[in-house]
Amino acid sequence: MSELPQMMQAIDPEAPGGPEVLRLVERPVPQPGAGEVLIRVAAAGVNRPDVLQRKGGYAPPPGASSIPGLEIAGTIVAVGEGVEDTQLGQPVCALLAGGGYAEYAVAPAGQCLPIPEGLEMIEAAAIPETLFTVWTNLFERAFATEGDSVLLHGGTSGIGTMAITLSNIFGLTIIVTAGSDAKCARALELGADHAINYKTHDFVEQVKAITDGKGVTAVIDMVGGDYVPRNLQCLADDGRHVSIAVQGGPQATIPLFEIMRRRLTLTGSTLRPRDTAFKTLVADEIARTVWPHVESGRLRPVIDQVFPLGEAAAAHARMEEGDHVGKIVLTL
View (spheres, helix red, strand yellow):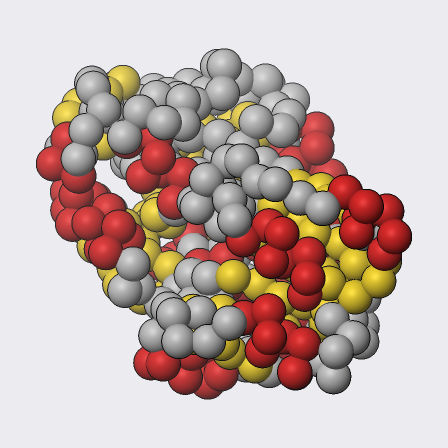
């Protein structure tokens, strides 16, 4: 640690607000604790929770950095107690509870994945948050397996594009919704089996037509609100509904007898507050099941736009406009 600087540049707003609060400031370089590594950050992914945090609606978990940023790629430059120093110099991407918008960030060693040859730092930084989220919700909570069908809202988002890629790799049929014909066309180019423009078509009717009235095995929903009862109409008997965000509102009225009659399951999760032990288990599972596809080049994130760290405000403005396809990334 003695060779490292004591201070670093970071984005760490003192008060919530619009994108303009995202200005570069100086902060102390964090020290890795037991089981942690210090990473010199090369790139950091931008995610919807970062926007919510900036607005004051999503506080970091206890003990997490106030600096936003849930995923990074870079090089390990220091290790904490209990971590082998053979890790030093290793290029990794990592899932964080916070701290990514900075020149240096601390991550639990178990939440790091090695960056294989051929994967750029910008690409690596765009993987962890969406991959961990889609894997835990689509494959662990919705129990999706080869041959199943899934409806996913926000098909051209970072989550949506990752879900399309994983569905193609693991043999799922994926139907997505998006807000324009252009976005639907892009989703189909990326490998979605069907894409529905929710502004011009009733997605419930469209899903029933696509599935010959049977419905889908699972719905991955980031809208909430009045989408939930409509999503349930899209499910096949014994289907699973997984909520991962509530962009359309946190309250919903649901038909309980219909859930009972058709044996539907409603579940959901948030990733950020989960403890290191859980995230390490997910990382181990991803290393075994998904990382070989990253190493072979079959899994690559869709990159929308790249901004320097100092232009984080522009990156957030881009996300809030809603026109992006795939991931927005900050570089250092």
